[in-house]
Length: 236
Image (cartoon, rainbow, N blue to C red):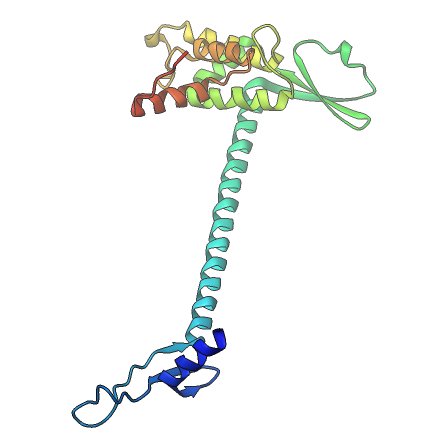
């Protein structure tokens, strides 16, 4: 049946040229509807495989270009995060520590709360922590604001490698919050740091309380912002 249809098609349409690059079909002369000049009508349809291959190569080049651009954007983002992390780590060292001492095989239970221990092999490094008053003075002198202190808070939680809560938090976190409370308690006119909003300790304590229940305040705030825009409501 397929062969018969093909034969009928070829009887009606004559193949003028059939090559690797171009296929041209001509309509066979019609005896029923001759043209005024005596010639048959010609219907030419051409499909170029060269053009198709060219389009495929262009699409492939565009995909490669898009992939390279995405990789560049990802690398730039990672570099920004790395620089920001280094900046926050330097800020933590500047505010919370005032020196360090090296020792070997000294038991950690002999270390007081005023030290933080980092162990590498058989050698340990104890960083001496500033007092609450010293940290508060630095918060004022360095003109820090809530965003910077909040980033320090997040970084300390990340480095702690354990859940943080009001009842159980890192000594560094406790020192930072106590120092922030001292600055919060200052009268605005007595605080030279005009970038301080005097709600730093309160906001970070709320954040620490939520962390104790596995809740991230930032996630809740983003969700509420989306709801305020979309009008979405919670149904219980």
